[in-house]
Length: 230
Image 1: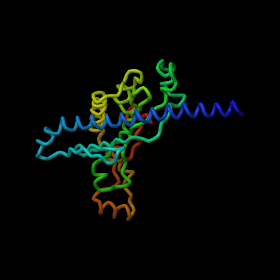
Image 2: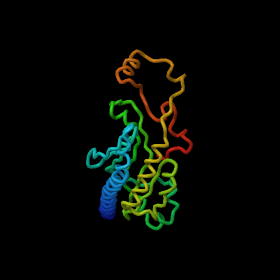
Image 3: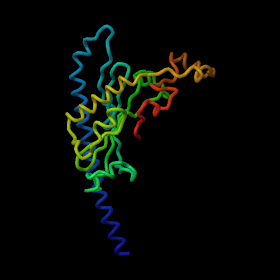
């Protein structure tokens, strides 16, 4: 019993110290990401504001201490910080890297999510509209980060041992997120899927001048060539 008690206390102390460090680093990383977004916003704002015919939406907004958003044209990027600390599942490729094998505590990380929504979905409060997780940013105890996501986001920033947090590094990640969102266009669902509607659906459609919408409505997101790493 004494050995078991000691083991519990030792493990609790180690895990608590580790997770608190990871959480603190992730919170710091979120702040750096917010600063990076402000640099992106301010850098492009003068040019965007010259587009008066027609004007383009360009707005940076803090939603709460753990979430902010950028509205650009018909899109919105929402970035939020998860409050929990996670560990890679045992089948994850990162377990095969020398970086994780040298120190398993590096396999614990905090998560920052990057979502892409249509501006009108939020503006008209269309609760059933779809948004998509386009990237997840992982940050560990060493203040290193990696990104899982679509297209370039899935392979440009996947070296956990090499990528270190910083405003310039996160600015590059944000540029990639914005480019992907702009290239990820809304598709009209197949006619056969929408040819029948209920009275309630039509009334809701008339009220909002739109139906349920998403960039890939009518299709599984995984069918968009590469497949999202969730």
